[in-house]
Each structure stands twice: as C-alpha cells, then as structure tokens.
Length: 306
Image (tube, rainbow, N blue to C red):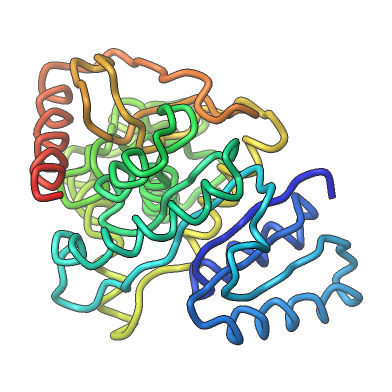
C-alpha cells in the first residue's frame, strides 16, 4: 500500500477501525495495544481473512511502538471505556495520562503524522495531544461530529422512513450532552428538516442524538459503541489519504471562528492530505451561536482541569 495508518488501542473501536481500513485497501495498518499478544492475535486473525475477502493490505499488531514508524495518520482510541453511570468528565484524569504517553511515543516515530483523537472525553484529549505533540491544528483533531451527525442522520431517516443516503446533518460543539444539532442544516433530499417535521419531533431527535452514546452504553451494559465510531474514523482517514476534501464535522482547535478561540469544538472542516485544510464557517442564528458557545464553555472547563 502507498499509505500507512497506526491505530492505538486494539479494543472494539480500534480493532474495528483497523478492519475497515484494511478491507478497503486504504493503507497498511499497525495496531498497538498494551496487551501486545491480543493486538498480534487480532491482526493475524484479520490477515487470515484476507484470502477470503481479497484485500492485500498488511496488518501488524503488538505493543512495540516501533511498528508505527512512518505512519501518515495515527488514530488514538486507547483509554478506559465509558461505563454505565460514568460521565465523560469522569474519564478525564485517567485518560489524560494514557494519551500523554501514547502521543509522545507516536510523534517520536512519525513526526509528520496526522493525529485523529477518539479517546474520551474527546475534546479534552485533543488538547492533551496538541500540547504533547506541538502540532498545529491542521494535524491534531478529533472524531466526534462525524459520529454525532451519523446518529442524527439515522434517527431522521428512521423517523421519516427514507434512505439514510438522502439525509445530511451537522452536529456542532463539544462531544457531550451540550452538543448542538443543527436542524436548519439537516436536509432530506435537499429539503430542510423543519419543513418535514414539527418542532416536538425535531427536539426528540436532537435529544436522542445528544444522548446517543449513553443510550448504547446503557444497552450494552459493558463497554460502549464501536461500529458507528469506527465507521466515522474510517470516513475521516479516507478523506485525508485520498485527498477527497470532504467537509466533515470534526473537533478542531478554533482561532476565532464562530467567535471562539483556544478551544476544541466540533465544526465543519475540509479534510485533505495535510489534515484540516480549512474550517468552514456557516451562518448561525443567535440561538444556535449561544448554544455553540455554551458547549465550548463546557469544554474549556475540562481544559482548566487538565
């Protein structure tokens, strides 16, 4: 393959992300986990599926970060999982230490890489990665809005009984309960959602979107979502490596956009070969802007705790 991707964390999110990337022949993949034999075992299992599925990507697993050298993109999923009753804030201190170590090891071996953070609390871990790596915002950002928007798209499609392919949506703000689903920018075959559903139904979809992760955690009892998160990471990695310039909602370090500075928040970003090519600014109503600023304030509180 022309490209190499590292995924740190061989749990459900990490391993499923590796599988999606390899099966699409997007890149060769290194999968690192503190449990090295587990990473090796999952990598070998996937490679033994290659003759059946017909992909030629190479997957290598282990605990030694040397296998990550020369990676174009590094995806960090490592961290403690969210458990029932646990908020994202509860994860802050423990996952901060994990992220510091992981990012330090990655940038030593791949100084030109692009970092995509997945570990929760997402926006705070992006800030930890930014501080440790010293990278500009083009090369360190988080997967959040793609997942949140995908959830909203599914809920809208299910409500209206239409194909998910006909639904677009944008969810901005922090990756948590204060995220900001934008009904005005959510469309079905080009028709704005407010023209298709009344306010009560839209509010119900917005609330379910905000609590989407918690809903799955409650159902699984142990662990958290991984099929949709890994699909969201895959879409971001594909846009970068293939230089597709897709506009995807990502957690990006803002420098004045939307009236926000020095904080990570979910905003539409154009993703290309160099990472974030551009932050796209959409017009927001006063109410939407207020919600976005409230969400960003929640993120800043986490930054202060760091």
